[in-house]
Image (tube, rainbow, N blue to C red; front, side, top):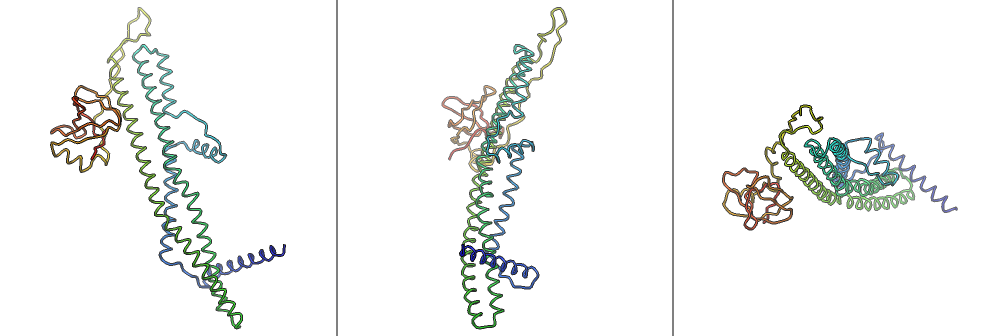
Length: 360
């Protein structure tokens, strides 16, 4: 009991000494030990990392879930450590609506069949969106959040401890200046040596932690690559779904009779526009616009390429592709820059560059 009382009294004395030192510094009545320039630079870099990590996280969350009410609900479930209930997203809701209306109009009619096909594609888009959101949350948002809630809090704790040790050091310096009696000066000098030693030790601990921010940046860079890969795969998958849907809708006749008209009445002719072919494939990603691709275009040589996604040939001049297979490609003079000539065994045909990864 007596030990605890003495300890509380010592802690109170230390707190009071720090408070007095801090107040006098603020009013310019006491000198302040400045941290070395390298440590100050590291502290500034960590603060900047924390600031931008939080902003990137917030904007990514808005991108993945634009509805603020849903974001708040998911946050509350997370705080309560409960599983977020599964809900249909907008693509899936639209898909269900289209499918139900298609069955109502009749799957045997062109319009009803088209609605069902569109609805099925919308549901596939919704499923792809969910997979993209889940992948981004695990591989991108979680590591960023772990830094804010883990590493940065540790740095903040050690930085606060360094601030306290710095206040103790400056308070000891001031007591030494004010000491007049020999015994008091001797005690103050001893106290100053101890305070200086503790400050130096804490400064070194803090410095080592702060220098670890370079590893944090490297880790976040890998997470950023994962996020971009997930986006690229998601958009490519959605693009393929829509291309396939365009082909399916294009197979319907341009006009058809309304089968729901009563017999004896004139059958109204309804025009169904055929799907317009895509104007051109999207520009190849940076990895494809490489010196190797430029070299292939400027020579008559061939290269091996890995197929990234399945592709159904739209005409006899094209070559259908299967994901992960390896084919031979070459550039043909006068061919559209979005395409290469592909060969698999005796089969030849045009293939889109965006579906390929050139191999060394």
